Image 1 (cartoon, helix red, strand yellow):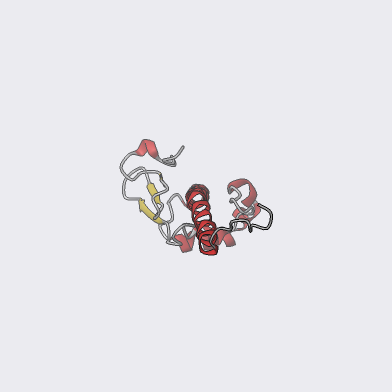
Image 2: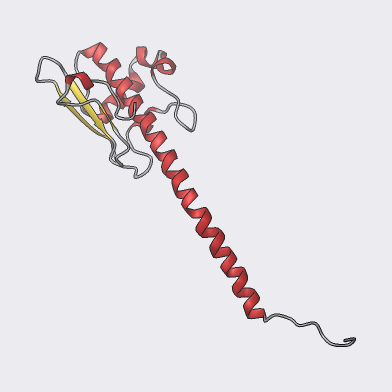
Length: 153
């Protein structure tokens, strides 16, 4: 037995084993990363819709109507002195921290604008905010009892 070389595995087989281990780790890790990203986007989107709702409520308190244009609502948030002074108490901080009015415009997952519809023709003014990525909605145009209620609350 002295002098006999130790058996060695093929270099190709070793490379294949390392590659297969890498693929295995990736296939286990990737779904968790997708789920984590989806959950982050859902949370952030719902925070943004809640802030749009709060902005609509503040706008309604001042003008007795809801704003159907998101750009106009954002400009109002940025320029109205009362809203600027009470910004920290009106709006929830986002996942990243500080509330930024411009963040209200787009859903974080697809960077598509939130859909806002307003019905101010009936005796009870109503609005609805819908997420383009289907993370929920706020309020309802048909059911007055759902005014300001979020689908996830």
